[in-house]
Every structure is written in C-alpha cells, then in structure tokens.
Length: 95
Image (cartoon, rainbow, N blue to C red; front, side, top):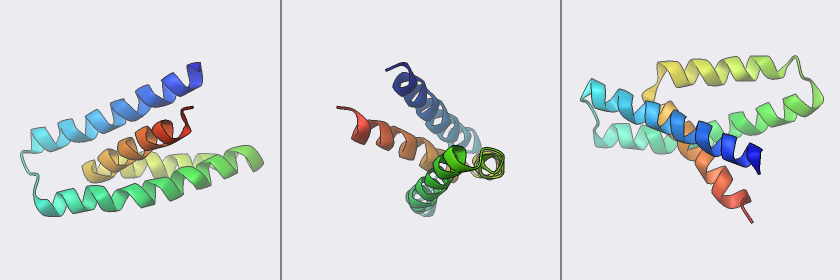
C-alpha cells in the first residue's frame, strides 16, 4: 500500500509541476491541450518499457529513466501527460 501512495504522490507532483509551468508561461491553447492528450500514450509506452527493463536489465532502465526525465523537464505538455498517466495507472490498479 505504501508503494501505491508514493506512486500516486509522484504522479500528482509531476502533474502539478506541468500545470504550474503552463500557468507561469501564461500560454495554454487548444493545441497545448492536444499535446497533453497526445503525451499520455507516449508516457504510457515509456513507463511500460521502463518497467520491463527494470525487471530484466536494471542498467538499461537508466536510459529510459533519463529519457523520461528529459521529456518531463523540456516539455510541460509531456509533464502533464506523464502525471495523468501515472494517476491513471493508480486508478486502474487499485482494488
């Protein structure tokens, strides 16, 4: 149960960071909303690849983690999409 809480908290922090970046940038259009929605499947695929490499090749998961971090830092839309993906995973996995 502790891991679920930590994953939920991390997803909320990532989502909040992306929203805060959009608020501070003062630029959120319909195109940006589409980018956020488009980032959800990309984040889901990267999280699945990270999970697979974490269990089968621990050193290789660092590459995927670096890609996730770079995308989250450079793109607020990906940051929002990653946060929503992580929260969606928690919602679907909770009994």
